[in-house]
Amino acid sequence: MSIRKLILVTNDDGLNAKGITSLVRAVEPLGDVVIVAPTESQSGMSQAITVKHPLRAKKIQLNGSASYAVNGTPTDCVKLAINQLLPRKPDLLVSGINHGSNSSTSILYSGTMGAALEGCINGVPSIGFSLISLDPHADFNVAEKYVRRIASKVLQEGLPRSTCLNINIPVAEESELKGIKICRQTMGFWQEEFDKRTDPAGREYFWLKGEYYNTEPDAQDTDEWALKNNYIAIVPVNIDLTCYDTLNNMKNWKF
Image 1 (cartoon, rainbow, N blue to C red):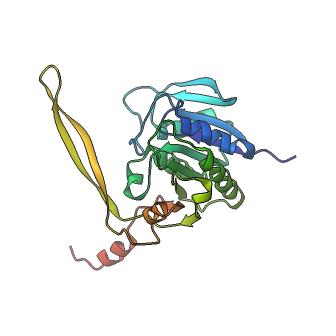
Image 2 (cartoon, rainbow, N blue to C red):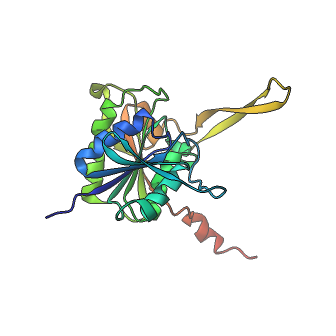
Image 3 (tube, rainbow, N blue to C red):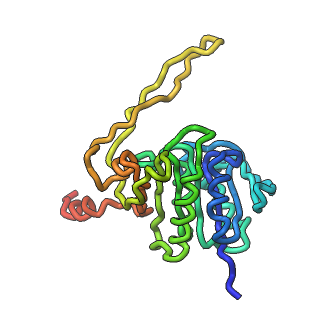
């Protein structure tokens, strides 16, 4: 008798986010689902870990699946799941569905992708899913169908060790979507600014704002181009951050 696949579900928007409910619904037909997710939003935490206070995992029931609420980051959730909470290493980790884009350099700040990268480090095929909408009540129905299709394919084919997938889904009617495009990460950056404000006690504080700049808007092999043209963008991501071109050039340096 074959053993059912074990699927770990997490996110960075917290257990109460609509996106994680849709993600669970999408992958439930593919195996046994266990949810280990932050108790509250941990957006922008990248691959941060908690070191200044104890972590607690409270077992709850969420949408009929075994679930744990963790008072930590998405990466904490994955570490706890693999090392303590799951009966064995999962066959697949899915993170999201994030409310908002994680394309281009946003991946560097993303708690959604931080969780996927942690799964990848531990040898688990891992995928981060994001819907390009910050609306907490966004419609995830179209996204769910593609999430199931992609997750099923990864379960069948696997992923190379040290590689995970960053998947961004545009907000569009199913009839408007042009399909799936395998892309590279767009070269772009956030021009960050801060609003300087004063609280009621007269103390200064700063509120982060910013604008994204795409430095190659016409490059048709990038995730930003794909999303703007109603494609689902899949970017394979490697946890090896070495720049091999520079490495080879630096071998000739004399110190």
